[in-house]
Image 1: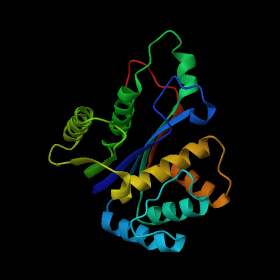
Image 2: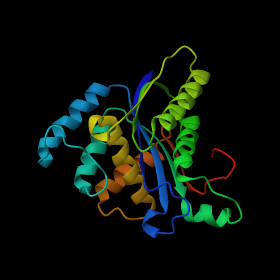
Image 3: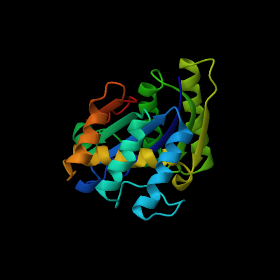
Length: 222
């Protein structure tokens, strides 16, 4: 089975940030087999929430009712989720005498660490990534690492990896909503029972790869 996936993040990659609201850093993959079908389902939701046909679904500052609708549509389409939740406060406590990765490096390290757990289980046909990684050289470094990893696990499959603005990819938007929801669930900040149910179902589904919250192991991928 071949999956199409989007990758996005919630929170900041600054491991030394002491702001409580930014304590969790979440890297998330949202994968489906029928990319066009999910796109059609999400497209049908936009007018229900007064959105234009090209408006972007985001977790931050969107209603929990909207988040439920987006997640439910994706789950109905066979959503597979990979997520790595890094507890930055626990990382700082564990690594008081060790230099932590710079934010730009950590963005790549954390994403690759998640993919190392996800790709052996699921072969990807295409991966769309939000442009959080800045600079063509760093994006190229990440793409090379992902393709090498995928080829090692699925040598007969060709993987397309692209960085793009989140408003141009429904799968990146789906990853954003999922990452934000899992972060809020871990911080006990979800209000509605419906959204709690969706997110707990994602966390408990053995077909998904949910790691953490945990401290980042300095010197190792994960």
